[in-house]
Image (cartoon, rainbow, N blue to C red; front, side):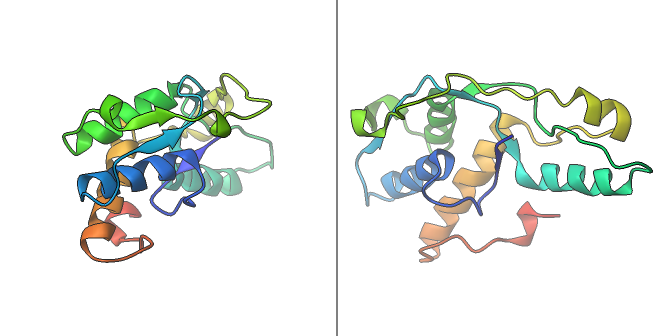
Length: 158
């Protein structure tokens, strides 16, 4: 399922949001245009998922596993947390643009990682709120440092 980090490409909604938050906070942008704010996704932190993949490789027998947080959050929630991180109200900056609605939108994507938890002992460590914080902080810092694209810092990938 969706695994996010500051390395996520700028065309993905999570990164589009966090980059816009940084730009709006810096006064370089005023609005963020998005499509369906009610779409629900199971977003997790990429390094947590990499750890899960490593655990799969350590298993005695190969098997298929789902890595997911087991909880969904809307695009609206992501916006809310991201803008709150920098002291802004998302409702003042986010506008709906029909061009960004997907023709075949899936309303909710939710993963069940029960098997990975039971057989591998894997579970995500970073919460949704922490994930948003990490991504926003990285893009705010990148903009403050004058970097166009975020250069990964060790503190995010231990």
